[in-house]
Length: 124
Image 1 (cartoon, rainbow, N blue to C red):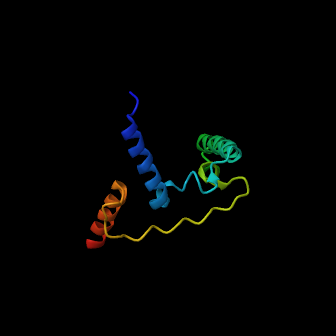
Image 2 (cartoon, rainbow, N blue to C red):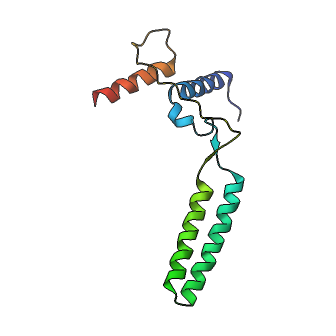
Image 3 (cartoon, one colour):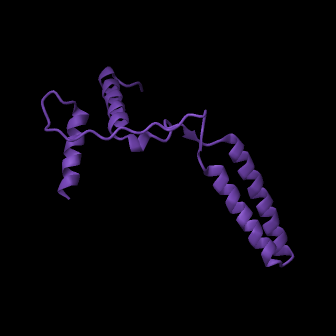
């Protein structure tokens, strides 16, 4: 079921507010960092090689080979899931969240909710 115009405007306003004030939540896709397919492929190959070494180490009862296989697997997983810089762009610094202001009648709904939340956090 499609959203009404009012619901769509409210959703757009919430999204803009989130992008503007809660940058730490939404910076992951925007800060120029992401998973690299090359690293995922290399990581997968390392995991498979490590798994093979681990199986060989267990079947031949050579503890050292099994431990080395486990370390190789761990390195492959870390390589595959570590985000890397993309397109040579450096991450842009995030803007500091705005200071809480006294709510006014012209403030948007999300601004008032954010101010109430900030005040609640300060009171704790």
